[in-house]
Image (cartoon, rainbow, N blue to C red; front, side, top):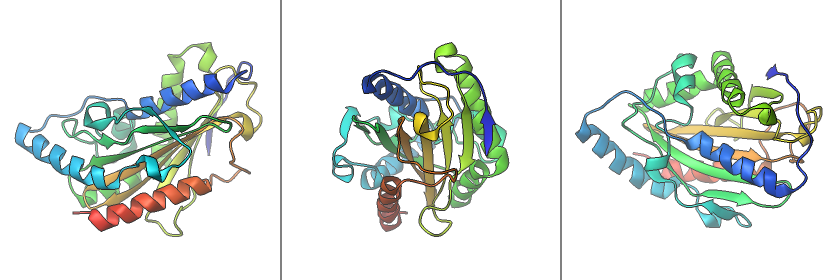
Length: 256
């Protein structure tokens, strides 16, 4: 586990503050970025195939009862090329996703009661199946974790003292009993939270991912303070395991 320490402010007084912050965090995970160029025909063909596959795999409202749509369908225009920021891709030694081939994201869903939970999924086209596997392998290893932590700290630095706080990045334990699904957790303080001495006082963002042919399928799960994570081990919550197993089953049934 890697950590970065700083001071935190006071705890938010109302869940609405945390809810808005978690929506922004999820939007940031999907924000667009630049990339290398590709031919117009290749990009168009990739977009069509990715949209079709994503329509079969991505989260829908019936998958998350009790959650509300807080942002309409993101689609390929709002999703970045890969599930990681390009700065991390360029740092971790794995493949860098072609910027002309954008991901396709689900709507953004949120449970707006404590603990606040936000979830969104995305499908990302890689060059081929081996590149998809290499992308996840690079993200999960130590160098990838360090690169992601450095990017999180960089983003925080631009948000001022309100968003400063402890950041920890770690690999999640295997989710489905094998190596088919893996992931990375980022713990962070929320704006206005008290000093981050307890995990229950911090939010976290999990990126859970697996491959399906040339695609990386990712689930972004963001939990607010007083979340259900227990103990020092980075374990996915039951709701994450249920959702990712659902996505995994769909992806295997429809992969090219």
